[in-house]
Image (tube, rainbow, N blue to C red):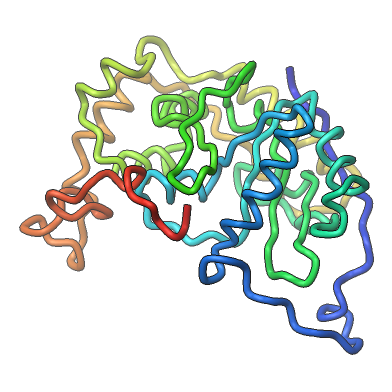
Length: 274
């Protein structure tokens, strides 16, 4: 089921944005990563019966990719998005976070500009509520792996499968290079027969067009509609790890552009960023 487009009611800008007198935002926990803040949100939703997991850039970081996080993407079941937003806006968490306007312009291959967006009160900490369908994550319940800090992420097979099914080539390569999984690992853990999910692509492109209607946006970023063989895509992206190495990541020292030779899997360590 496709979640409807969500347009949070704009709230006044933070004082720092409006130019009035203000106290600067505090730096989030763990050196600015916001681990404790997102954990508090996750535990609040879980106590209220709403399952969730972290997706997007943060999930790629957890599995070893060299990405930079601006905000957390918190995935919830499609039919729980509005309930989660209401709970965060009016429940006991309202003294810790508040809704803020969504991202003002469309992002490439994303409907993030339609999502509920929240900010920490007095803390430079932001997160979005992402419908599970939009990132092709099956739920009921989510198949998750928790970091050593306790943050839930989709398991690696679920995450990589979603990238194949969405034909998200950039994220697929980042996750392959971060996790350094083998071609054989994919054969054992992924569904590689058939093609990417073109029904999902069509549904998301209809939603992207609807979100843009009447808003005067010059561009609408539609999802790629090409048909790919999941088997061929997997083989190609795993076999080309070395080709993605650069001059700063020589093959004598690196297995992939994100992994030093012999380095442990990132998700087995207590990283400050996850």
